[in-house]
Length: 400
Image (cartoon, rainbow, N blue to C red; front, side, top):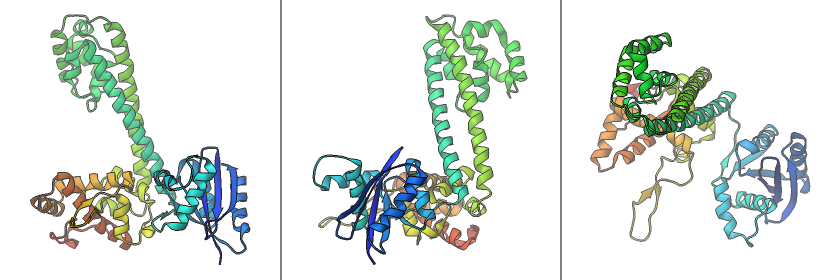
């Protein structure tokens, strides 16, 4: 049977598809709109260029603009490989010419799929995992927006009221943010006084209102100079504080949605039984793996995708030299690393394994990565067998 390799250079509004045969000859080249009708026509036309051809598809995007094309290919029973854009960029240097076009990139993607054997197949994720990926990405954006807003708030406060800027941790103290929506200047705080501020804070539902008001008045009594631009800065502080409060509410709402959908997944109870995994990290794990362990034939493959499997870098007489792989899923690595770090503190078995690695001369980061690699074996086996984690199932000498 003839085999064709079809490369898709995915874009926002249009894709370009190039199909080559086993000798690398270009048999098909077409620019198609990112539209279901045109994409289905392309999927039907590519196999027709060679009779009884088996087509292997490859694309440089596995979500975003390429999501519709991938869904249509998977729904039509086509084999789809994912080749990262960075890989395509580096591979393009080995092809003739310095020019760059969508058709050339699609041809490179097809040719790389023809020659390489290390590309990951794209498999359909379950609905819950897809939703968790979207919710988690949105939460990440909201958290980043909140961090930027808090930094702007602190910088603005520092410019005219440094004592109040240093008095509270605005990333944790919601009551301090509520305070700033009404009281922002030293003279305004002194004029209002402790009793009035405390009463207002209590009406807003702030806990420890008396302590918060007392600290605020103390900071105001330490500054009696009005810095130039104070009025404008105070107005900005009030607006930014209100913005941070809104972001906090949005983050809490998204986290509630993540938890609700996560607990509906078949792997939810299993992952939550593993030390170090809470709802958010477990949801990120599912979102990164697609909620299906069938695409990982063994734990080594999962560890490689997660970036916790060391890669040898030996040359000549130098041996035993390892480094972290360059190609891995950073979201999956984050979930595995943070859960291992938590387990190294709260799980006796993981703590013992971590201590042994430190005794071997590894630094903190290396020891956590080693623990994360060992935990991958356990997590993969638990999900494969649909069993909850139990401490007695893992000997102390192996770690978790």
